Image: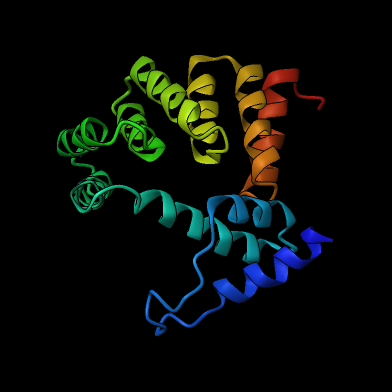
Length: 185
């Protein structure tokens, strides 16, 4: 019964107009968002919930941590990896309990080709937030780049168990299965 009631409330909260003052918009917990993600009836709903989860992760911590996170994200997008690494190092130093700092630094390391550092930071992110589907997808790419296609598939399947409507999932799953088990699959 609770599951049936959660989704309509979640959808209503996510549909609140952007013009609402932030304090008037219902605040959903990560637990509620993750439950909604599993129950999402379609990809559009799942994308809206996913966006809310990412926004929550990226807005945790003190104002200084949030500023560093935003600056790191801008630097990451601009491919200014040294600057992004410095920003995410600072996020981790100030708020080591936040999974997203570790995940974003892992992304920087991955893009720089530093797979061991990326894998280490993903392990830290997952230790803090085992439901971090983004970190699991990242781990899948690390395993794939290392040539361990079965581990890549398993990590991606773990991400799908948390976020069943992950964008591009069918194509990636098919490709990983082909690489792990052969052409005939």
